[in-house]
Image (cartoon, rainbow, N blue to C red; front, side, top):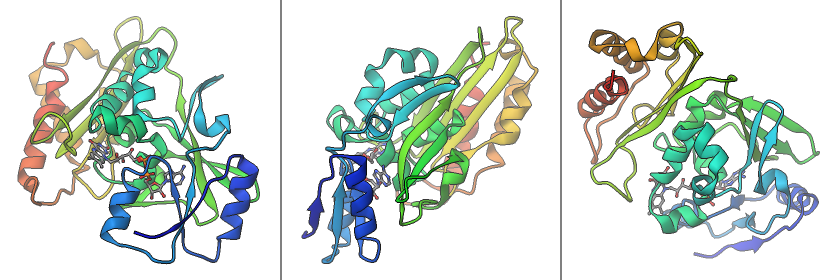
Length: 290
Ligand SMILES: Cc1cc2nc3c(=O)[nH]c(=O)nc-3n(C[C@H](O)[C@H](O)[C@H](O)COP(=O)(O)OP(=O)(O)OC[C@H]3O[C@@H](n4cnc5c(N)ncnc54)[C@H](O)[C@@H]3O)c2cc1C
């Protein structure tokens, strides 16, 4: 594997490097857990890698409070998410997804931005962020910033909406409603417990008011369609209901709605039939304690 590497330390240097390489073949590298495997499979002799690992800009590197939510820089690693008490308390779905990604060693370097930009239908952190209805903040080489809903970020299998002169800078996760009670989690089905890419995954983040009525719900599914999907009708089905009084038949109606968003494939890891069955069962299982 042979490529040129350049390591900007400031955003100005980064944007200058992106502009300089506009006409050439270049890629960004963050934790390299996806990129190196890809380049090993498809070596590219004429490639420049713009290494983001030394970038000193808190929009890319920090976790910070905003008036309407939390900003997570794209260079934040999976391990940093799992060590952050605010994220764990407010967004358990994100904490759980980051905890279930690969192994501790991979999590130490794997970034949130890499997980999103790879745009795998099996991305764990990406799935949690879709359930949270996060927004993606992208920086252009002229310094302007564009914000897109995460649902619009994924455009196909391993394809995102970034143009060549754009880079993903931060993710903005909206605040939870005040005093809401949370039912939030990430369920990952694999053929073993760790170092396993999801065969099916389900992320949910459900908020209810002081009377127990669900006021906001986000449900996302992974590994069952070309991109991670926000299960809109299933999410809307929950609004106005009481979480704790959803029994077996309503849980099955909910799970049927989740399946509307699937277009699974059969591959070496699971058949399309298995993926749908597993998704149906884990979807209804979130109400099992009722
Ligand atoms: C052994 C192993 C196990 C794994 N298990 C899992 C798992 O269980 N769950 C899971 O979800 N993933 C898993 N992965 C995949 C991978 O670890 C994650 O997708 C990780 O989050 C990628 O982050 P990274 O920083 O390493 O990305 P990199 O490899 O550095 O980059 C990935 C892609 O994103 C682009 N990119 C990175 N940052 C930016 C940015 N800011 N703006 C624009 N483009 C950018 C790169 O150019 C590249 O195309 C596994 C990988 C390995 C090797």
